Image (tube, rainbow, N blue to C red; front, side):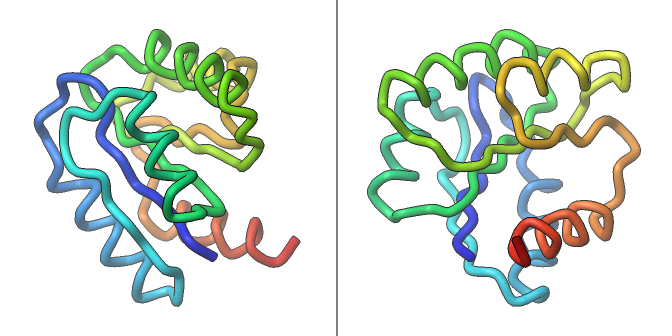
Length: 126
C-alpha cells in the first residue's frame, strides 16, 4: 500500500510526520512525502500522480477543520475516492467533524505512532 504524507497549509513543523513516515516504512508500507506548506490541490494532484492508496495529512497549525473541509471539496472535484486521514494537534472534540468532512480516520493529540500503524495495517487488510 502506498501512502502519501503531507503538511498542508502554513504549518512549518515536520519532525513528527517524518518520524511517522519512518515508522510506516518500517511496517512495510511505501511512503511518499510532499514536503511542507502544500495546498490541498497540490496534495491531491501528487496523490493522483503517484497513484497513492491513502493520503495522510499532518496538521499542527490549528486549522484542521478548515483544511479538512477543503480536502473534501478538492477530492470531490478531482473524483479521487481513496481514504484520507488527518492527525496532529487535533482536539478530541473535533474528530467527529473531520469524519463528517470525509476523513476515513482522525488521530487527535496523544495518538501514538503504533496506533496509526495498526490502523494502516487494518486498512491494508481490507
